[in-house]
Image (cartoon, rainbow, N blue to C red; front, top):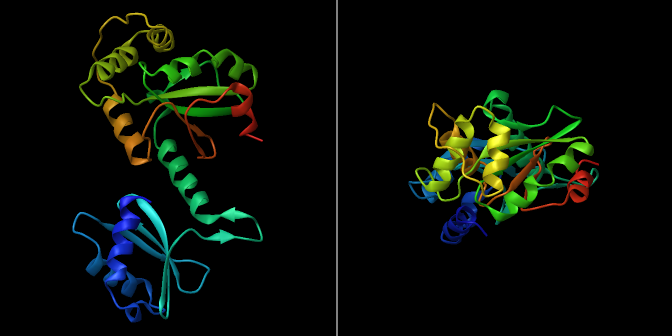
Amino acid sequence: MNRLVQVILLMLLSVSSSAWGADGPQQVRDNLMRLIPDDFAISAVEPTPMEGVYRVGINNQEIYIYSKGDFVMIGDVYDVLNKVDLGERRRMQKIAESLDSVPESEMIHMGEPLEHYVTVFTDTDCGYCQRFHLTIPELQNKGIQVRYLMFPRAGIGSDSYNEAVSVWCAEDQASAMTLAKAGGNVDYRNCENPVASQYELGQSVGVQGTPTLILDSGKVIIGFMTPDELSEQFN
């Protein structure tokens, strides 16, 4: 359970449930403002098709709150008829929108555009990232293009960050990426680059480790997958 849900659950336990009747969005917002710590910001309170259920955006996260009579529940909402987790679908949509905001010119593309693509937050020093990189020819044969975004796990200003910048600033980015992931020495370069902003983007969409694979649908896959396993995710 993440900190956001823990905090709200603890706060709710200390408040009379009678305050959580079938309130409108503004009342739900007002009640939450009295409950959550100052470092939490509410970005949206939106009604859902379910009576008494609201989708609430807090600190770049979204939760569903069911508020009715003497009951309060926090979790996801499922469309049983269509067998869809609405919370997960919403998260995927938001992640896809975040990636769509990144210009193609700020990604390192391996090969030409194909039927599908996978966007990968990567670190040149990551062992599983290096292993994934070796599968790119097979992925291309399966109609999947790899688009890289930089996510130096050690943070901005680290050695892995500097290597990521050098790869980005190389004349041939794809070749420099391959060299770095093979353990070779990439000539140090510096230029105007998006590495820091990509690292921050990764944090904002929940990247915690590398490689993190994001399908064109917005579905997030954490860790290494074989080409066969990844190809099945597009079906």
